[in-house]
Image (cartoon, rainbow, N blue to C red; front, side, top):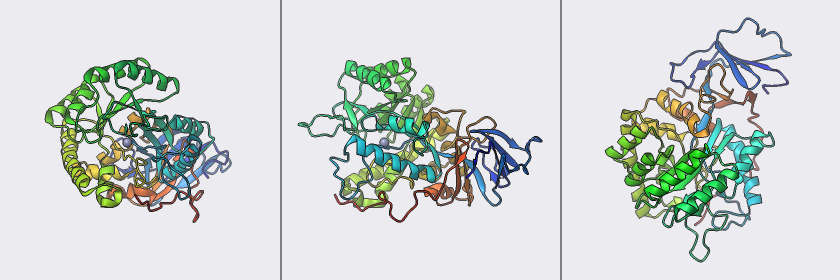
Amino acid sequence: MASNGNSTTVIRNGTLIDGAGNPAKQNEAVVIEGNRIRSVGGLPPDVNLEDRDNVQVIDASGRWIMPGLIDGHCHLSFGFPHMPGVPSARGTTSPEFSTLRAARNLGKILRSGVTSIACPGGTWFIDVALRDAVEAGLIEGPRINCAGRFIATYGSILDNEPSWVGTPEHALAKLCNNVSDMITEVRRQCKHGVNFIKMADSQYGETQTISKEELAAVVEEAHRRNVPVTIHSRGAGSTRAAAQAGVDWILHADLAGEEDLDAVAEAGCRLVPTATALQRAIELGVQSGRSERELDRVRRHIEAGAFVLQRSRELGIKVLCGTDTGNSPHMHYGELHANEAELLVKHGGYTPMEAIQACTRDNAYVVGLENQVGTIEEGRLADIILLDADPLADIRVLQAGRHVAMVIKNGKAVDLERGRSDEDPLAFQPVSF
Ligand SMILES: [Zn+2]
């Protein structure tokens, strides 16, 4: 444990990858005081490594030191994983049960080296409660920055309850078919403490389901309350319209063309492509619950998305890393949070260093902690991981916590063994459809 009441922790040796893009270098001393990084580089003269009562020394020889990973797109309260014997109505059960399950999932995320997540959409206000419980120290987990239910219109993704059911509170979306309903919902969600607003366009970008005027109204209302806005947008037109309306970051954007990306660049809007979920669907094939026809569509989106990645890099658009973990029974907690970095390298032509920056420093934006987390620099919050292999040599080293030797969040080491047992009720269960 890093903090037996010790106020100072010193990480000696190892190779430092600072998240800011500086070349990896041999580390002398990263000094943590309380929950912040006090210094990086030489050992300050007043720190006495022999003072074992007050100074904890971690020897990182042979290891790589990095900022904690950030998943910019992770859902906590969609009701996954399914559990045998636990009833689930369309993926959800009671808010009480869902909250407890989600709390347990948080431990898996943290132990895989992920110290912050952005949650664009959840059921009820479960994610808000989880965020506050982590912050209050009630439960263990990554820092959470969250939206509420998606704001959707007829035809938007996840307005998928049957017509005779409508959109009950357990639904993933709140149906709002005009500006007035949207503003009311933005206000309601702000009142209940969301960090940002999530809108939802059509599932595959078939049509633009939210009008320009509606996008602008939501952005204006949310921004006036100092709350940023994101959108699920795969279509070309919806992506361009969202950027022009002042949406802060766009999720997916797969079908965006040259001119749409010009609009994104001009607006200074960020992109979170989230190719991981598409990639996972292809890997699983029909096991993912998709038909061959839908899988073909997914393949086309991956191809189109590769252009978006490459062109965005050329245009200097900030591309962030999100995975959509928790959006389906196949997107397991603790396993996929760093997979997007590999796709940036493989499909987008990003260097491993650029991909690391995307899932650390640049991702700090979507968790509302820019210049607070995501880099190992003086004054930053002490969210740090140690790896036993070099992620610059193989970016997959970041995945599934396989090479995570230590996780420090907010200055404290996480007990990696806790919660790792043979009897894990949340272990993956094959699901039949
Ligand atoms: Zn999602």
